[in-house]
Image (tube, rainbow, N blue to C red; front, side, top):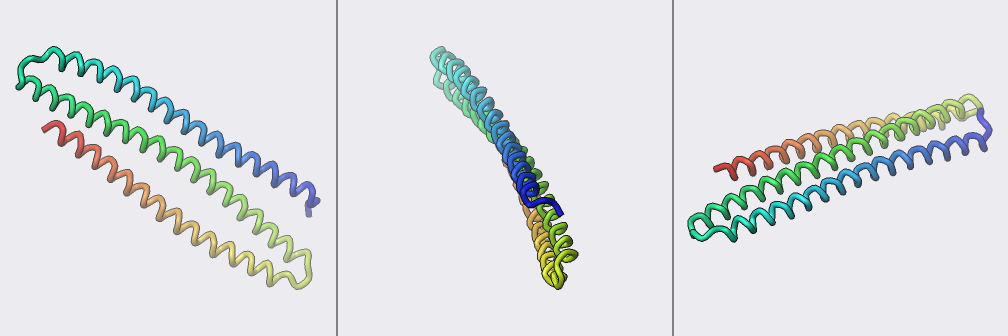
Length: 175
């Protein structure tokens, strides 16, 4: 059995590495969002200037109505594209954080099972406690598997709905 101080140091190191992984994923996501927002702001400013110049050059009311419809269509398409880009960044980040969490959960499970096994070997009469720990771990694993499956199904359904809504928005603006 490992020295308790060594085991504690190893757990602290693992916790630090895990925390750093989560922080790096979060910062990367924030960086992507910042870039997207800066690009959207730049694009919006350029589009607003272009639209204003075109509006100021129009003298015919019918042309004005057509230009307004065109501007509305372009704005809706840009908004849908922006929303889809945000959704993709959030989905990627969520998937990465979920993967990191699952890895940590798996590692914790293995350590708990190894600890229960060690307990059953080292202490007289501890077999019952070790069996209870193993049973609890098995039940928890089954519950986590069900939750993960449900979360993945929800994510897939959400993604399909977002794509359908975006496609519908693009189709409705083309009419």
